[in-house]
Amino acid sequence: MSKIRFMTIERHILEAEKKYPHATGEFSSLLNTIAFAAKIISYEINKAGLVDILGFTDETNVHGERVKKLDIYSHDILVKALEYGGHLCIMASEEEEGIIHIPKQYEIGKYVLLFDPLDGSSNIDANVSVGTIFSIYRRVSKSGEPGTNDDVIQPGLKQVAAGYVLYGSSTILVYTTGETVYGFTLDQGLGEFLLSHPNIKTPDKGYIYSTNEGYYKYWRSGLKKYIKYLQDAVDRNEKPYSGRYIGSLVADIHRNLLYGGIFIYPADSRFENGKLRLMYECNPMAFIVEAAGGRATDGKNRILEINPKSLHQRSPLYIGSKEDVLLAEKFLTEEEK
Image (cartoon, rainbow, N blue to C red; front, side, top):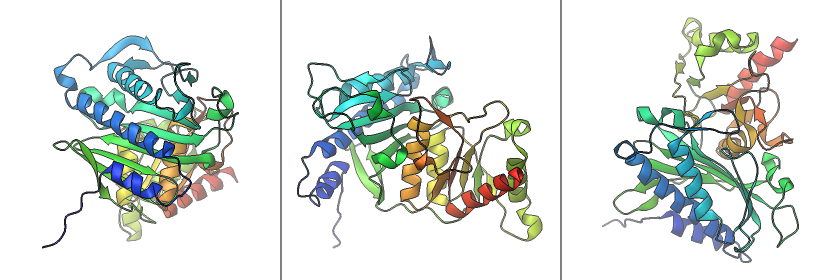
């Protein structure tokens, strides 16, 4: 009889910790707390239609967007779960204009957490998949003291871990420390995240492109030519590409991570610097996709090498299978000649 081995995320993290003799357990505890918060958010999302947490509040966030009730709930859960553990010196949320200090009564840690509490939440009322995105850095300011702005504004290369939680037909938590990408699916009966994807590798080339073609008229000519090239694959006797766009960053990138392809949120005539947030969306997703063998750029520059100037800086994003992203860059470069 074959052995059935259930690898929970807690056990997985503890086993990984054993590889580092000088580990204090602080990082492991931080990851486990994020997973715990994700379970709470998942539970509330699954019953959102039965309670009064769907729809909009009367508030707008720092980006001028109307705030969904679940955005606020998810933000509050993450802050409350993570502020007291002694892991962090500071936090920053896509929903908050400024940095989030650790309350004075709690111990100050050596890690920094940035997060988007509920990406794609505009789709939640239609029961479309949404997600939480997180990014972990080591502090650069003086140890033992409250964190500073310098701690949260670091280039993506400085991340020590990044991940996301996709709340869909099932809840899956994906994370990496820069080497292997792991996926854990939440068993609702057990209340545990179980290892379901032990080594996620994205294909070098896919046949899916994900972008909002409703904004085609605002695109630059290089991007228009690239999309047309993909659409004309059949005329070249090549396997055709499929357009797949959910409008939820986590869901679109998760699908392409597994199946291959490219996700594009470009700069255009309306948003010269793009629209996605470098620190909360682009950096963590780039860290994950690169660890899985993919590529992530702003159309020219590697996302992880961009030196951020502000907490809510925006960036274009071309991310996915390496060959697909390189081809997109080629079309964009030829436009500039």
